[in-house]
Image (cartoon, rainbow, N blue to C red; front, side):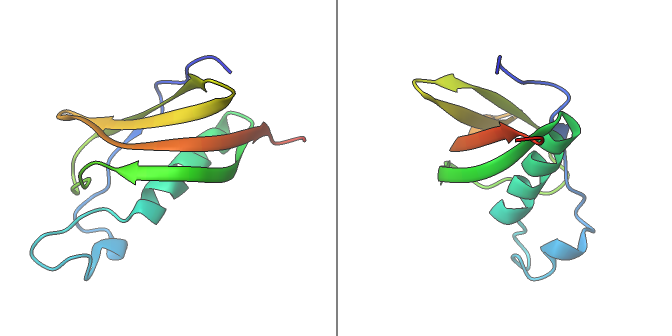
Length: 101
């Protein structure tokens, strides 16, 4: 797979129900929601997310902030970089397969 960039671009609205209580007065987007966005974007491209071998959050993603996911080869695996206007906020080592496999 070549580097996958746009259109894996999104943002999550501050009014989203999954932000209730996460965290009051200092909301951040949960990692599971970010991974769900990645999985849905891959599915639209005929791929499926099989495994997240490791994920590291450098800083939180805030609501109403646009972000981008770039996926590229790294050694024998795949690496995802999640970035916003301030730079990379998370990285992940992934296993991805075509949906028909």
